[in-house]
Image (cartoon, rainbow, N blue to C red; front, top):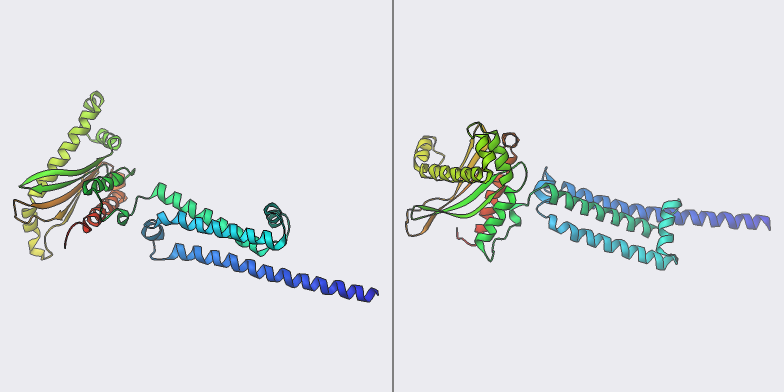
Length: 309
């Protein structure tokens, strides 16, 4: 009788061991799937996935996290029905006991991955500007979309301090959209030796407005000199000028000709984008330049839906 009892206990132990191994393999499969998805998400596309791939599609991260949370809840509900235990008991087994149900392990893996995606979304939203392709190519209000793009890239600390989009019609420039970070402009003006600090202390708004006026006048002067600049570079046979970057002692100024003059005085025959930064450190780190080219791409992207060619 004792031999039969020992054999029964041994068979039961072996069966329990096999069942536990099966669950372990199943749980490992869930974890491997989550790891594969995360690795694929991070490494897809390019050597700078956060900036070049994940950030452009960051608005989808909360949706994907919601799908993972739903999957985690469904696995946990399945475990409740299958093992006839409450949610708290199943989770307690996962934490306090060596043996855990595979569905619970999978649910926790999905939940952890979902939380990771939400944290990734918040990090991108807080630290990276919007990708240019996220602006509308068919806006209801074209000028409003231009302003949204310009103000978005200007507001980021360490990038551009001022930018505006100008249309040339009948040889007269009209500001279509403008954005400025007055606080950073004022900070930069205090660094400029040619600007008296006493004047800034007396009327900071006047000093900021004067600097914006000077930037606009300089942009118009550069645009008027385009034929001479094109002629200057004509011997190298690389075509006309498109984008300028003047790295000066205090920051830099940028100008891109987005629509070349057509010679038709009755039409909107030219368009250019101008931007400036008074932070030399960020110019050297190329942050201001990256923001300018991102802004330029955003303007081109917006115009793509409303222009031909």
